[in-house]
Amino acid sequence: MAQIWKDEDVSLEPLKGRKVAVIGYGSQGRAWALNMRDSGVDVIVGLRPNGKSWDQAKADGFEPLPIPEAAKKADVIVMLIPDMAQPEVYEKYIEPNLEEGNALVFAHGFNIHYGLIKPPKNVDVVMVAPKSPGPKVREAYLQGRGVPALVAVHQDATGKAWDLVLAIAKAIGCTRAGVIKTTFKEETETDLIGEQTVLVGGLMELLLKGFENLVELGYQPEIAYFEAINEAKLIMDLIWQYGFYGMLKRVSDTAKYGGLTVGPRVIDEHVKENMKKASERVLNGEFAKEWVEEYKSGSKKLTELMEKVKEHPAEKVGRELRKMMGLEEE
Ligand code: NDP
Ligand code: MG
Ligand code: MG
Image (tube, rainbow, N blue to C red; front, side, top):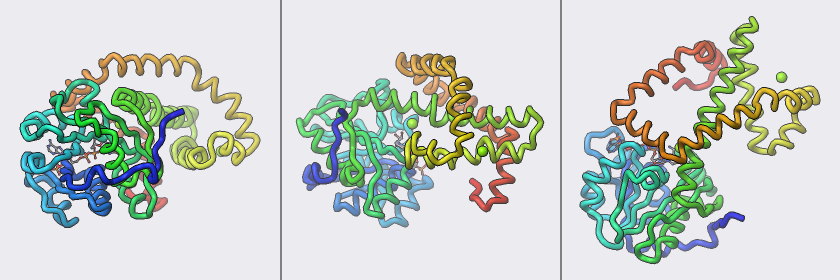
C-alpha cells in the first residue's frame, strides 16, 4: 500500500524562518507562490526581467527579483519554469547561488532523473508534483480543498528533507487531498508513459481515429465530432466520478453490451504491445534524449506536428461546433 500523508500528519514548522524563492510564475509558479504566501510562508518570486509574467507577479502583490538575486536570498528554491528551460537557468543562475543546507524543489522529476541537472551534494533535492494544472492548484486551495500530489526526496543532505517536502506540499494545499510517497524515477517514468500512451497521445489518437472512421464511412463530420469526440468528455466525467462499473451502470444496456464485447477487439493486445515499446523508450532514456535534442534545435518537428493537428478535419469542424455551443476558443 502506498504511503499517504494528510493535512493533519504534516507541520509547516520546517518552513518557519526560511525564505522560499519560486522561480517562474506560469501555470504552477503562480499557484504555488500565492498558496504558500496565503499559508504564511515567506515567498519571493524570481523571474527574468521584461518577461510576460513579471507584470502578473507584480499585479498579485509580489516584488519579483531577477532569478540569480532571488536564488541568492532564498533558502529554498522552487524550480517552476518549463522543464526544458531549467538546465540552462539552473547552471547559470541557481547553482552559483546555492549554499550548504539549501533545498531545491521540483514539480517534476525529469531533469534530475535524466541527469540534466546535477545539484551539489550539500543541498536537499525534493519534489512535490501536483497531479493537476496550476490554475486548479490555486482554485482548490481557495475553496479550502487541495489537489493530490506526489512527493519524493532525491537527496537528503540535511537529514530533514522529508519534513521539508511535506511542509511544502501542505503550504500549497496538497496534503488536504493527500500526498503519496514516490521516487523521482517513478514519477518521471509514469508521467511520461502516462501522457504518451494514454492521456495526451493515446486518448487523442483514439478520438481522432474514431472520428476518421465515421467520416470515412460517409457520415457527416458534425455527427462524427459529437459521437467520437464531444461525448468522450461525458463518459470520462462518469468514469472520473463513479469508476468504470459506475459509468457502465449509467449508460444503456446496448452501450454496455456493445462496449464490453467490441472494445477489447478494437483496443487489442497490439495496442498493449505498442504501449510496452513506447515505455521501453522512456525507461532507457531514448525518448528524453530525442526530446532534448528536438528542443535544442528549435522544436521544429513539434511546431510542424502542432500545425498538422490544427488542420485536421476534426479540428476544423470542432472549432465551428464549439463556437456554436458557446464554448471558449483558445
Ligand atoms: P510554465 O510554462 O507555465 O512556466 C512559465 C514561467 O516560466 C513563466 O514565468 C516564464 O517567464 C518562465 N520561463 C519560461 N522560460 C524561461 C526561461 N528560459 N528562463 C527563465 N524563465 C522562463 O511552466 P509550468 O508551470 O507548466 O511547469 C513548471 C514545472 O511544473 C515543470 O517542471 C512542469 O513539469 C511541472 N508541472 C506542470 C504541470 C502543469 O500542469 N503545467 C503539472 C505538474 C507539474 P516569462 O513570463 O518571462 O516567459
Ligand atoms: Mg507530464
Ligand atoms: Mg450513443
